[in-house]
Length: 299
Image (cartoon, rainbow, N blue to C red; front, side):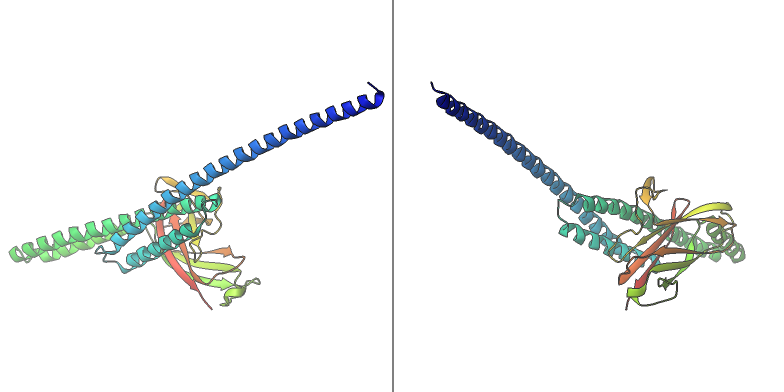
């Protein structure tokens, strides 16, 4: 075999080796692509299932709110709070329906919001049960008073005094309560403005009612501020506080010195961009929801 023939043979052999290597590489790449595609499909399928389960939970919660609206609640403020939370659940449910299953981050956020709404609703239900129990007790007491009045008129004064004492005891034993809260909208120079496009800061001036039975001292006052679409402002993994045997997120926290007398305070929250609609601020202290106030920003 000549030298030229040997060279051709070696070249041919080398080409076949290169082709074989390329085929093996292409096969490996194809397998990797197929495996990754399969894993991605499985992940999307799992997220779809989680989204469907979360949607069912939201729908169940919406049905519960419908049931509470049909209850005999003799408290207009509590009825309004329930109505706003019910609308909030509807808004979150609609957003969930429009959220793609692949958007794992937003689905996780909506799952947290579900837990928060459930906690708030649980507190409202507790207040409803308390009001109903109080009304039932007062009804029984009134009937008893009427019967006793027929027997002994002289007991009227004693019963009236007893009712007054019971009322004062219930008031003193109540938890802290934010009785009022006003909103002032400020621009970037901290000047008052009502133009939504110029608002860069929210100023909340609030009043905590007098409570002589509350232990005085330093207290952490937590606030949760939600925007018109139900997003919690300032939510981070570090902003957590205990409520209803769980940890929930807060927007801001303020330490106050409470003496048992009326307390007036102010808190602020910056906005990168204000939105038209209802903002809500919920106040919490000592593990209790002590006030909830909606504010509307409009042109």
